[in-house]
Image 1 (cartoon, rainbow, N blue to C red):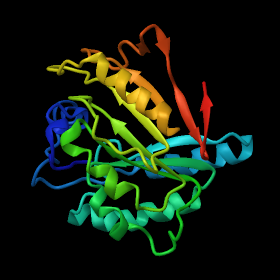
Image 2: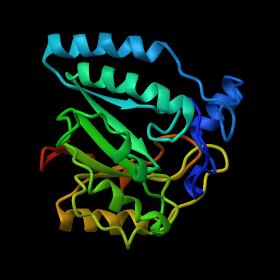
Image 3: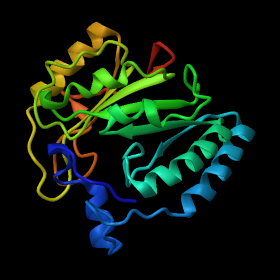
Length: 231
């Protein structure tokens, strides 16, 4: 748990608010990071259940941190996390970062062309950070995705080459910043032209997942290999 702000998308970080206000932890900025124990045990159980049922489950790894932050505590914990991820291959792992420039040098030695059960993603909130996709697209991965969250401006300059999935979400929670729904329409059209799966998660609002519809439709496309699975 913990991180350091790197861009405008971090202003109202839900993870910072959760750990500060509800947990009373100071793990942000130059403060110490904290490694929790419960999730490490849980994934072993989830992997076993997924293997027994034959149904794959998705795990969003590191929801209260940045998996690829270059920080002593993170660097020490990451090899251990890779060991868990490697062994729990009945789960599909989603790793999201605002620091895609760090990914290649922090991959495990046996990564090669990517592990089939690991999805790599980067957060891009507006055109100012469209360059993050340039770092992501050169990393071998089964699935590469962009989290356009919180959407703070248009993404007209985003190159979707090599990107399999894009998630759009307006900002939620106290002090949320408003959105222009044309941003969502424009990026959806760009995804359709590129063959990138598009997932409209939510509109901007006080509550999370408020207004999941875009122009009266629920659009929850998911990547499946290089094809689109619409649900």
